[in-house]
Image 1 (tube, rainbow, N blue to C red):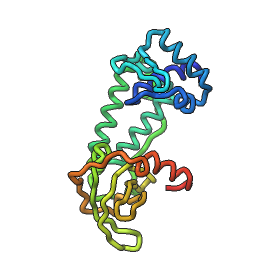
Image 2: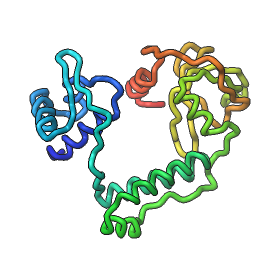
Image 3: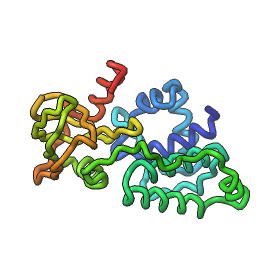
Image 4: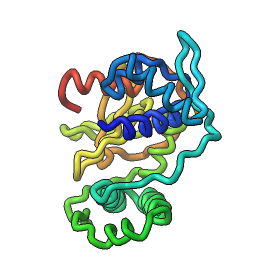
Length: 230
């Protein structure tokens, strides 16, 4: 990765974080040495970017700082357009509208040369008859994940056995044409994946769950990577 790209990515990374980020985390994230991180941070500070650091705590950036308009490469624009097309075809109408809105905002920032590139995109996602319908409201599930809200539903497993589950919803995962809801299942006391098309009587509970490292998305993802499967 070019230094200029890495510096830009460090700024984006710090803006996304809600707490201080240590130099070691930055080094691991961008696969560079601690010395390189220290040098990069100092270069950014010297260029006028409001990054603040404290020994033993990490770095934070003033969230009021705004980056200059982002410049995309043609391939990056094509990847974004493809992703938005997939969201439009494989989620629900409300989420598709959000994706299209984001795409219009990106288009509004592009110079004329890149607008022309958009007209030459040749990679598409088309509607498919293989899409498996579900009863649950996709947007409601996303909102419950975002709000860390317990959910309850009836689940029909592959043996046609129905159970009532209460889970901590953690993520929605696409295995086209199937969507999985990943979460911590209170009944099984373990991480479980549930196919959206086998969920019925979905309801958000009044209770929200508190962060628990052992039941978190990060721990789930580590388990998935270890097993090399979902």
